[in-house]
Each structure stands twice: as structure tokens, then as C-alpha cells.
Image (cartoon, rainbow, N blue to C red; front, side, top):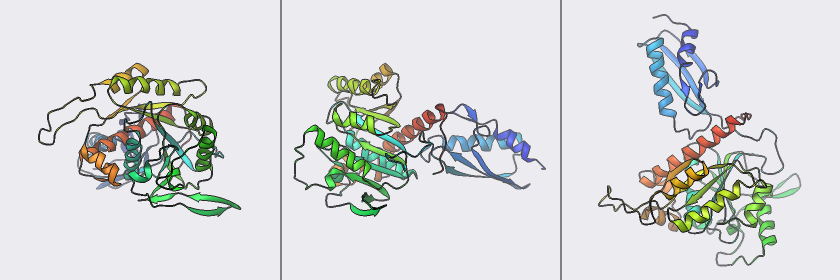
Length: 363
């Protein structure tokens, strides 16, 4: 059957991206289109390698070509990504980072650092360029959770200035105050000293080009949070809570903090950790130890997305204690849950960037 490029383009213009509510042709997502009578080949350029709609887009494109062009021609579809950013002008603070994600909580003990570490690794596994910054000055836990207790960053001179080179972990750039102090040494600093140290590990670190930099914040809404909000162009915040009312009460304060006029950081959504427990021998049984549905209700109250429901799993706890994060244990339910979380976070960032008419920067 003989067909034209216009017919192919017309067929693909029928496919709507579910996030942006526009067709793939208008969004300029179809690249490198070539065809013969036997083969149609093109690339779909995504706004993030962690796109959760990849399989649906491919299926819809194949069906459209079969119905509107030819049901006999072979179709080859490849994927690439071009991560979007709000930062069209290089700034002095983190100039090589496209999107900055803060992971916060109203109180400690809800799994914020576990979420930050595994979110960063899930984004890395998707193919994105990722950095992880431990901004919890008083209680840095990322070195332990990644098994990097003995790691030390190196120094490199750049333009006559000494820069700290982040520690490499499977291709992810990692920085923590924990790399600069002894393991058992307490951080007995007043607020100004802590914020000064934070400024240093942000501005004096030689971050390479990154699609996403994940910041693990301390719990609460104090000096560190204000410093980051005022100093760092944060793309969006992820708020972690558990379903119980004690945690939700503090999580509400964290969400309200980001909505303050003096802060004004978009909230990407809420993560409910420790949602329920299912015994391995009874996988269909759910025990709601800390209550049920609190995180989802919190997201509804603040009109922000509900990003994920993370269950209580022994493997998650052991992975953090042993420096073997669950996101790298690919066959586990925990890894799949964090993969979904990474997709949802990346999706929210892409949608937010598109709504604000931002420029797209090649990854």
C-alpha cells in the first residue's frame, strides 16, 4: 500500500498526551520520522525518562497507524527524553541543575529519608541524571542508607576556586554533611552555623549536569527550610507523612509552610508511608496499623496530588540499615512502589513546567 508522510502525521495527530491534553504533533514530540512501503519508524520524545505513559503512547500510535494508514506496515518506535525546566537562565545557585525536588515532613520518623533515597534511585534507574543532597544537617542519614559511611568527597580547583566533588554512587552524585564529620561526632551547632554549612554544601559543590536534584530536608519547618526556600530555586516539594493523626497534624503545617507568600514553593504532592502491613504468608490481608487513608485525605484538603501509598515492609527497613536501598532490589514490591512514585513525581514536574510556559533544555 502506498501512503504519504501527511497521512502518517495526520494519524499521529490523533494521539493526545494525557498530561498536556494536546496531540503529539502539536507538542513536537514526534522526531526522526522515516518510512518506506514496508516500514514506518519514528521517535517519541518524552519530557522525562520516568514517563508513566510510555506504553500507552506506543500502543495508541500503533493503533492509529493501523487504522488510518495501513494495518500491514511494520512500525518501529523508539523513545528519547528531553527533561523540561523552569530555569531558562543560568543562575549562580545550582546552575547545572534543571529541577530541584525537596522531600520534607512535618515530623521525624515518618520515612522521609527512606523516601528521598529511593525516589532519587528510582529516577536514576529510569535513565535520568540525578543528584542527592542530604540537607539534614543535624541528623544526616544518607551515608548510612547508601553504605557510604567511609566515603569522602574530593576537592577540585575550578576557576581558581576549590570545589567539592560529590561522591559517586552508581552514577548518582551524592553530598552530605555526614561525609565531612566523623561518624559518631554530634553536630552541636546553633542555627546560623547550620545554615552556613548548608549554604556551603549547596554552593561549593561541583554538581555536574543534572535532570533532578533531590534534597532530603530535616523534619519540621525551621531555619534550614527557610534558607533553602529563599536561596534555592526549588521546582517543587514532596511531603511525606504516615496515616496517623499525630503525623498528619505536622504534615499540614509542612504543606501550609510551602504555601506561605514568603516561601511560595509548589507542592508536587503527598506520599503516605507505612500505609498498611501485609504478612508475606497472607499477601491479601491488610493491617492498617497507623490508621487508614490519612495521606490521601490530606492531599485532598490541600488540593495537591496524592503521589504514592507505601506499605510497611521489612525489606525496606533492612535495605536502609544495610546500605542496600529497596529501589535497587528490582524484583520486590517496594522497588515497584518507588518506581511508580518516581514516575508520578516526574510527571507532576513536567506538567507544572508545561503549564508555566517554560523553555525546554536538552538533557
